[in-house]
Amino acid sequence: MKRTFASTLAELRRSSGLSQRQVANDLKISQALLSHYENGAREPGLNFVCRVCDYYNVSADYLLCRSNNTRLEGASADAARSFLKQLKQLADEAEEMLEEIE
Image (cartoon, rainbow, N blue to C red; front, side, top):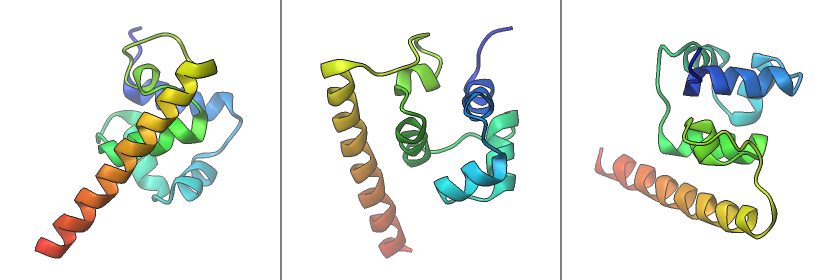
């Protein structure tokens, strides 16, 4: 079976020994929404992807099935974390701007 975002997200949670309820609470989303992400019924935005990468300490490439290398290591990990932090800040700023427009 080909690995997908949904299956990877669910596997990361299960391999960490966490319940959907706990992960949803930690990531500040509903359990129902996490379930939709894990079964492929919905696709998350960039902000959520960044939070999940930080939460499980994995690269976005792994989470998005572009690499089989699960963990960030060394200088590459620091660069990736910095990049993800910047992406999250941009996503947060974009959300704030959209809220101001509405």
